[in-house]
Image 1: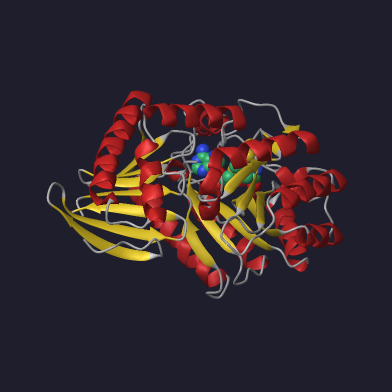
Image 2: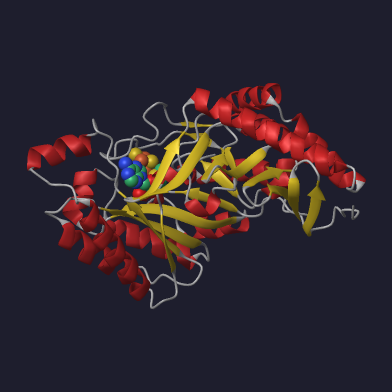
Length: 405
Ligand SMILES: C[S@@+](CC[C@H](N)C(=O)[O-])C[C@H]1O[C@@H](n2cnc3c(N)ncnc32)[C@H](O)[C@@H]1O
Ligand code: SF4
């Protein structure tokens, strides 16, 4: 058998018992594939990240949750596995991966052997301990922008300081709270212990929860100093750059000078849920501020040299407001003068059944978009957003059901 080098790249091993095994060593992740039929990816701790098994794709969260993604005649299907299903799948993945690791280990370099041993050791007891450590470290991490699904999430604050948007139930389970520098330091120490070698795979730091940048400037900078001291950028992988959400109301109180300071502290991009450019739909959503204020905030942030991610909510206002929502949202984006480093995300509205949005829509007789209308609006928002930035800005789908940490 060819001696497998721990240095990066793919290699192939033919085994009598399991057939052909493909290994792919990336700087901070390892993929094992049996006959290209079953594929498993792991971080440096041996913790499963994703797998392709029996024709289905699964993503493994740090929390222990597992997301199933399959295609369906109606489109993509995304579903979080129930706890017993998740346990069963995790056990099956462990058994398969451990057998592969044993079959290929003898031809591997010592570094790769140690990695395969960590994969074999990630059994049900290890998984349970990791889930418990997660629960002791974090409040639920409700959502982050799609380009930070592989971030280190740091809950510098918990919850949403507004928490009243009619369609959003992400943070209703908790009161807004700002951590003290000491509590933040303890939180980061727990996160580092939880991630272990897996930290090197994470590419950015996302400051949770819903609007961490609403923290008054002096306190915010103290918290950013704690984060930067605990997780300085390195050349050997690991997270670089700080990112966060900001609601528009919170955005009002910071000046360009404040944002310049935040840029010096490492903030690279700020994500704002504009949702719609139409004032009436905006009020229906009960967002804080207004579309015009959102434009002002974006201009201030960009004047400081920080980029923005602007989120639109496809389907907001239903059929009745569809045209206005589309045209006003695109006009608002145009007014923002977005550029290359900025992003636009489009999130298809999935209102919780008992939300104020659902109740008000029923009262006002607003019909939701059917799936063909939703697809048409997504396409129109997408092409319009690209045109609004003269092709400069990346525009992507933000599907809240894809989220997993
Ligand atoms: C945590 S929220 C927003 C962050 C920030 N607090 C703000 O309001 O700008 C992130 C995004 O999730 C999306 N979102 C929240 N609830 C949603 C829902 N029920 N359906 C679809 N998207 C939703 C919205 O587009 C929102 O901007
Ligand atoms: S959309 Fe943003 S501001 Fe509104 S409740 Fe949700 S997290 Fe808070």
